[in-house]
Length: 203
Image: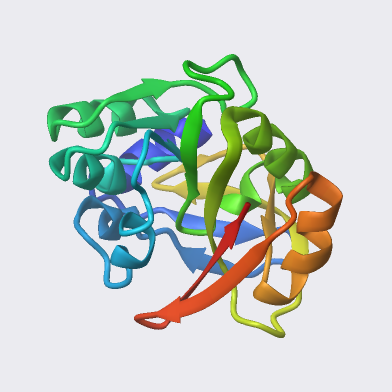
């Protein structure tokens, strides 16, 4: 059901995120169908084979391919993978915790658009991504501004009479990165802001 609602959102249907405390917010996935201000902050650092985790419709995967950078998108939604391939990018429909091509050989892994929150456990996700990048590799993540409270929340999608199952999602801020990196095997953290968005590099 989560996948169906996400696909509907990509196709332009009105879908919202419902939080366990009763809050709601629109899920506007169509904004990921085209370049977003600040994307260059991630793209300019991808000089070798790049794994785009939670790639969605693949705007970053496709942008890298057009620059001549080998890139692979990974997403659990078949329609998102279809959109990536249709636009000229390479993508597979798979969970990041499942076996993936090139494990241990990727130069860079991207966690854009807050995807460091996938699964609601940033520690587990970063440990997994560390297995996927090569020694000295880099993880580039989009995070929340300094001072934002990190949290794990139960959310679900709903729209047009359909309601998805509850799942967990994490929020990670710049302020969380030092301890998070130390727990997950990274030794260097750099953070910066571009176009109102915050990014971090973990090595």
